[in-house]
Amino acid sequence: MNNAYYAEETFNGTDFTIEPFETGDYEKCRFMNCRFANANLAECNLIDCEFVDCDLSNANLAGLSIRNSEFSNCKMVGLQFNHCTKFGFSATFKSCNLNFASFFNLDITRCSFDDCQLQDVDFSQAVLTGVAFEYCDFAKATFSSTTLLRTDLRSSFNFVIDPERNQIRGAQFSMQGLPGLLEKYNIVVG
Image (tube, rainbow, N blue to C red; front, side, top):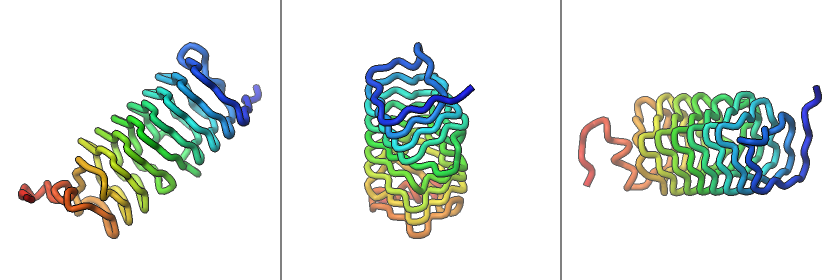
């Protein structure tokens, strides 16, 4: 059976929880107001795609390839990005809710995050070298053996990062972010 191929198509308001998402390649496609909650996106390829105002919460991402795709104002709660194909993983996230997602052991150096909710997200063993996190909320996010070299967290908040358990050389923090770096020492920065 051949996989589907879609190029430069627009999907508007499609509910993929009712109509199954067809396994295949999606290149330069646009998804607007679509519902993917708990949908099966396994073994698909998303290349230069755009998702706007979509709900992808708890979708199955096993073997999904995401390359140079953009997600704007999307609900992406509980997504296991660590199940995606690691080769070429690259995405832009703008004003997205990524709470409870996992980037465990994933190289996300070709990603950017702007005004995103990243609460309870697992970044353990992930490579975030050079990533810019603009105005992101990291409440209860996990950083363990995470590579944060040259990562920009100056405008982000609510993170707790142990400098002894993570690589942070060259990372950028604001003065307001210092308590998140010093929390393990039980000192007060005022």
